[in-house]
Amino acid sequence: ILRKFGVQQRAYFIFVGAISARKNLINMIEGFKESGLSKETKFLLVGFPSMGSDKIKETIEKHGLRNHVILADYVEDQCIPVLYRNSIGLAFATLYEGFGIPIIDAMLSRVPVVYGNLGAAPEVGNGLGVAVNPFSIGEIAAGFQELTRADNEKIEVAFEYAKTVTWKNTAKKT
Image 1: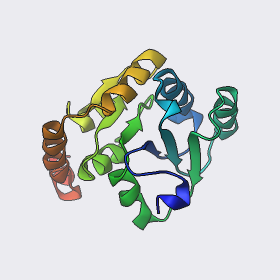
Image 2: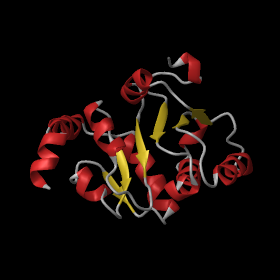
Image 3: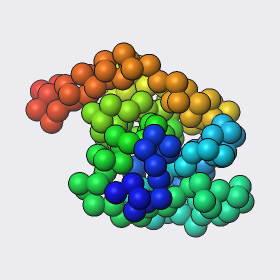
């Protein structure tokens, strides 16, 4: 599966969701570039092209990242957990999320997460990821850096927490 997408174990970051400007991917790509990690790692974007995907492609080209930012498009459901588990971490510094299921999916895969500090993401992340201002490319860059130094104990706490985020528990809380 990793070969199919041109990535190696623990040598890439992942984003899962619509490849859309509203997901703040332009700032995340710029943060990836600013982090300095684009020289040695890749950024795998998993999801269907959506609104503004042409601008995302332009940003990739503008920063010379064609070989470092991979647009995976559609990925079979059974491949996604494998891609999470083998990544350095999930980059999910979106501007707004109604919930943020990829945050929980990443935690269940025992990988660290950087998420935007707006909308539902901070509540979903429960302080167990790296919260960044999604408007700040510098904070996003620092978030990428922090994912490379993830604390295994915190990852295990996040895993245990994510196991409690079930449809049944959500329905009870609602």
